[in-house]
Length: 69
Image (cartoon, rainbow, N blue to C red):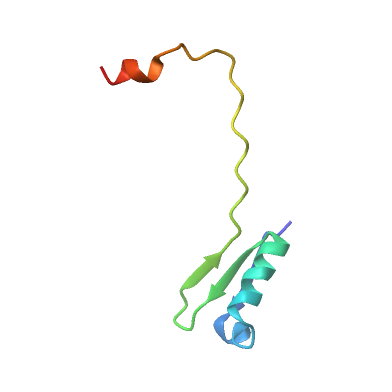
């Protein structure tokens, strides 16, 4: 499955920047923009962060004061 779309800068000139970003967000695919000089810029959605794990244990009373002594 292809997770990237490639367009030239000329192909995207008629779209607003907001529209381009919304497309990347809703499709959850990277968008590669090929510039006239041949270089490329990749716009991709940031994956959501996983929740932190819950760890067993306890915090002893007075722990904060102890680290500043």
